[in-house]
Image (cartoon, rainbow, N blue to C red; front, side, top):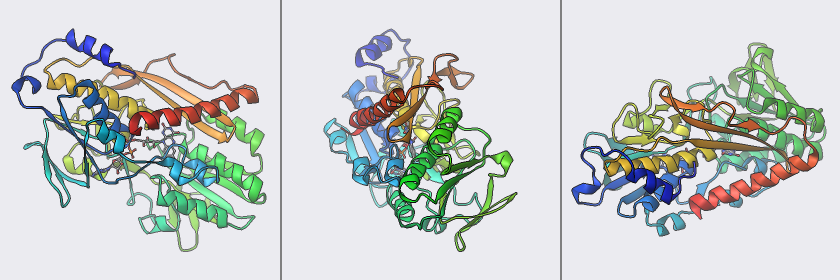
Length: 420
Ligand SMILES: Cc1cc2nc3c(=O)[nH]c(=O)nc-3n(C[C@H](O)[C@H](O)[C@H](O)COP(=O)(O)OP(=O)(O)OC[C@H]3O[C@@H](n4cnc5c(N)ncnc54)[C@H](O)[C@@H]3O)c2cc1C
């Protein structure tokens, strides 16, 4: 949602007053944000922009952020990792105090965050945006060591380069197998964009090879658009095997590069295993994650349903219909920032509307899109019927090319808003 400073202040000034505002009590209120990705860095910057009086500290494990959106292009040799990387100089210049290190413990009674081998930071409000952890206990045979042989590449960086290297080194005739997880997971269209761009590469450079998706689902995001495009562009280079066709992988064996389903086993030259996921570990430690591994939140303020004064945004949170995307994470960061400032002032937060748009590239000049608009309803963020949509099923090549350009423009815009 694009809440301008003016809109925010206007609605905030009209809002009902609540007791015990931290700002009115004298000392500058303290907001700590854990995780400097699309959600957390957005929230930190927007709290500071909405109220410069608030002291904002952003705790981030790495000095360089490596963005996942567009990282599938690296796998097809279309992009370098450097194009995905950003530092926090501009975030700091915006007045956010950077604390580089791992948030190791949250004391929700004392309202403090302890960094591993670092300081303990007090907060009035904590925003948690740790993204995802891969569940190395969910798929027999797949653990952190297996990921060195069968990369997930679902956190961009070394894993992306490893998968790229494997694809590039593969002999012609080999099969690339992508294992796609059940919902919910980070970036619902991501495995299918990945398969498309790998097929694009194979068609040109390894024409006797193909990519197979073994899927734990029977349907996926932008399915008709992807499948129509695959039929037209990659009829011999891409195959999707759904859950009901025997696509669900029950175990993997990195030693002999096989993946086993109920219907038999598949031998891969390259295996990209995207395992089930959950909220980043610190969310479990802080007690904001429930048994699903994700964090239930109030859909208006993103305050945890389990722990007061702690907000959770981005991939780590359960957001009802809103998908786990960088676009969503950025929008949630802004809305959460407005809610946090309002709550610190003792004011009632404005009920938000949020937008998500996910672009996917099927080829470098072939883009498709899904968009949705969401509002709080029945305790979650619900899709506003009729407000979103997908790219037209039939469209000329010029429109697909234009959508690919929009995708590129979106990446530049979001990364300059968050890190620029
Ligand atoms: C291949 C791929 C393609 C994608 N393409 C798109 C796309 O085209 N469009 C789109 O909108 N989205 C896309 N996504 C999804 C997008 O990357 C995520 O939804 C987004 O990154 C979520 O933002 P986040 O801030 O919640 O998490 P992240 O961006 O992962 O940020 C989390 C941050 O928290 C830090 N952190 C975690 N724990 C701690 C701790 N204890 N202490 C300190 N720091 C910590 C991490 O270091 C990290 O920097 C894609 C994802 C993948 C994998």
